[in-house]
Image (cartoon, rainbow, N blue to C red):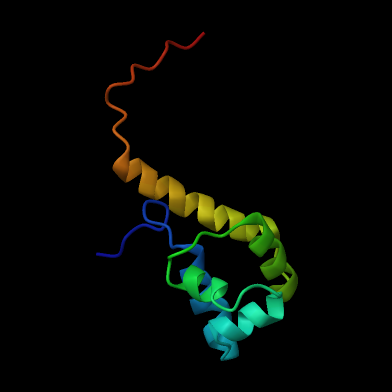
Amino acid sequence: MPMNLLENPRHPGEVLNELYLKPLNMGAVACSHRLGVPGTLIERIVKGQANMTSDTALRLARLFSTTPTYWVNLQTNSDMAKASRRVDLSIIEPLPRA
């Protein structure tokens, strides 16, 4: 059964690799050079070993004609999904609504 992307969103590195780098036959190191960042940065993002920063989001948005928000939101959604599986909220009693 396929997992719901809202419950288990993909890491931005996976999206970058599958939707942008592979179709262009571009490696992560070549992408890093085009972005003017250290050679291993995009490699680490693609492997899920590094997170998308605002700086990298700005650069990727320029390179691929997207928006920085697109890349940052991918990271935020991935982070929130991981946190929701890890954080126990059962001890927090919600306040009544006003």
